[in-house]
Length: 371
Image (tube, rainbow, N blue to C red; front, side, top):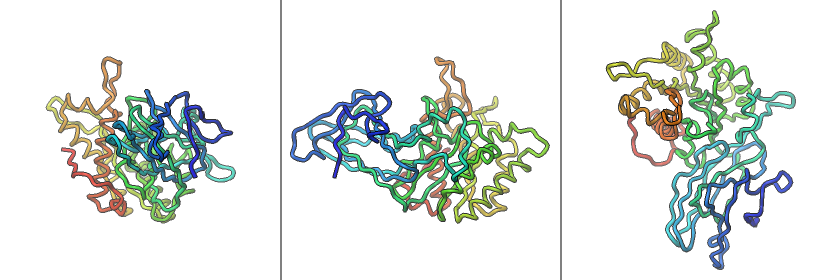
């Protein structure tokens, strides 16, 4: 029932699967009687494997290990979504690991599509295939891909602090959150850099979510960074920003979904006293008031990230951001992989603390206090 994949199988639309993006792998044959626990692909550098699939949620089951040597596997999906982290096997040990990948397309209905930005047209998140990235220490014996309809889908709506960032060293909590969930939950990230609530709705991204959401699914919405830049007569925290959050609540509830409002991640902004300064004005307060008004859960990520940066300190907090003087990078808004991972921990901890129904799908993890 399996299809053999050798290093010579290169992805094409005609074949529908194979190694992708000019990356290469090497085949290792240990000569055992069980090909599923003896023959595997590995690589001297990371490699990509793609399969052409339609929109939906896919349960991926990997068989990992080597009969003669240790292996370590980290897997990312699509645009650098973390799926498996440092899965180790000893010589002769084999493990099966399962995770769920959401695949989305631009189509809303027969005549309407999501209004993507030009840079999104080439993103792996929006193409017609499922892509897995394997690290260079892996030993992949088998990949099983099954379309599943029984997952709770968690839709993410947000800006560059949530989006699946494509380039190192940038990262977001949205692309680090998947491994905090067991199978049963699929993360569908619809965030994009530069968006406000208004431009998210205007580019038909909310309409896309509403076209595929099922009763019991979740929508996490985090905006503020770019909304603050909108200076029209009807803009502001208690005007357009609040009204659009109410729109999210109304529309998501009308589909039987669950909305969670998330206040914006704090910018790294320290005063001379070593304490963080408020960089979002009244937007976090406006989000809290709307959450209370429409009776939906709220995660105060502004306060929680402020606590974390202060705990790290003026200098230590730089380690969580894209601040690399040797590369001319001094970004106090966007996170590197370390910072994004810590914020994903905060989100997961808050899901548990607020006893959302999603919490039963969380992996076992120690309590995390950002302070």
